[in-house]
Length: 264
Image (cartoon, rainbow, N blue to C red):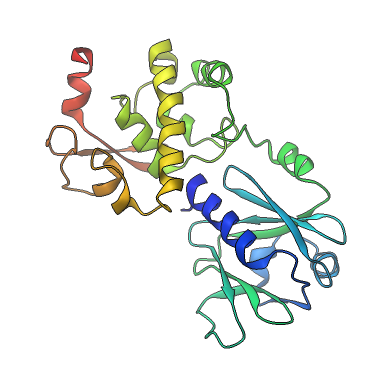
């Protein structure tokens, strides 16, 4: 699933390819991806508009429309934007297409779990969805207050978009791995030092992923994400990586490094 770094890459891609290009036609190939939005209002707002700017909050994008309002865009598990010129072959699984005079911007989403909608302003959408602060904007004080009072496993808490927006299954594992914190640990049991480490690691990991274009092969060799798979070895100590189900998702961690945490 696209997380904050991937969605930031999508944001920059749209800015690079699709700003200030009037939309001649909006093609909705499958209504599932606009579920909850009013189709006539959405088409009326988009057609004839240009995208003036793009904002991001966690995994959510907001595209400012020149005729008023903001397009909301969430990518689900498999969604991505694809800019096409007139001569390009259209990829499979195009669900929505914004057609310009020359070229188009397509929303490709095989599993159709993404969503496109409309809001008067991003702040209203964020409030209605109760999205937490962006993971790259939350302060240490906010982070400590939020997660110090959280019930349950810390990995599940990190993935809760109401607490902090942008972190999912993959990056939560990397953050906890770098701090030698068990993903199953109760959030309320963690120390101030743990909170500080997680906050710093969160910013470092997300910014690193953005800087390498979310290509895990280009991440430092010390990162768990480079080889995060069943049967893989810990990049820190070489021990076999373990898995556990936390918050309905598979967590990867090194039990040997957790046991030796007090030595570092």
